[in-house]
Image (cartoon, rainbow, N blue to C red; front, side):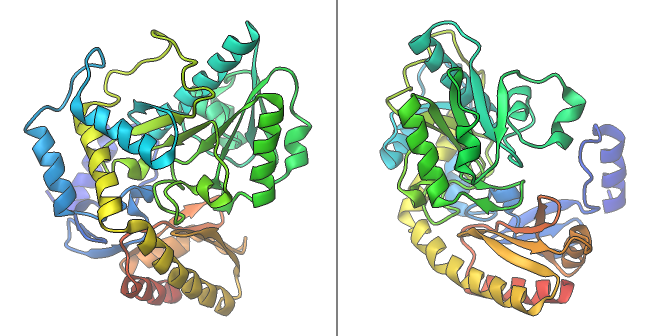
Length: 395
């Protein structure tokens, strides 16, 4: 079939929840994608911060193929080798106590919320416990995750949502403090807000939230689904601040394209859930878990964090040059290889993205007026230079 025919067939059969680009991607190699017309794209979106090692990575692919030939799925009524090893890799790397594997980031958020509520129930008894979340946050599309997503646009069509959620101003500690009461069981926030516009947490703010949670025996949940897995130069972004949450969620690059997520808990709360409180059919299946094991192996073997810290400085410098030379870019913000260029309100970000795609560069948007760059973690300075030239032309 021709490209147009694939698009027409998809539009005929898909529920219309995405305004898709009129492109049919067929294959990938390294940091490049190719469509059904043979056009080549430099990918600075990485499947929305998923493909840490780029496309068609033989080392990763071979590990997945080997697992497919062994066993793909067992229920969680049994142990399986990859999930045991994957959990050990996560706890050993982070110093946390226990892991629960899910199929996605939204499911990881759901589990984290349940764990926090169960912890409060165990400690304080029956009660209608509340959660403090952040305005302009994004945690997912399921009802629980949507309930703690601080964006009316996403929430309004699906009211009523989960009760007992209050929204504070991100990076405003006093705003959080004013919402705390005896029913507060958790504070949840992205360490770096992604969809909300690439906003890193301020150090004073995140440390203040950690101290507040300690003082009031409140569970601190860090959403690391987009900003985790090395994207900010640390394995998880909260490590940049010298703090540990009680629970963190992870997905996206955790499986580098294989659907897998997890919520990970410290000793304070890890044993709060009891048998029967939570479950999943596919979460932690051998195929998904094998991808996690290989991802952690490759992070260590190829010194990915060192590479991110080196190349991100070069990316930041190039983006700063673009910001200084373009009158309608208001600022650059971000951490590591999670960067955003804030575009003046009267310039449509979508048009810039379209122009860049026409010239062979994939970039994303965030927060309405932010150009988002979340490339594979293996990009080189040469790839940054290539991106810079295309983006300058597109701007």
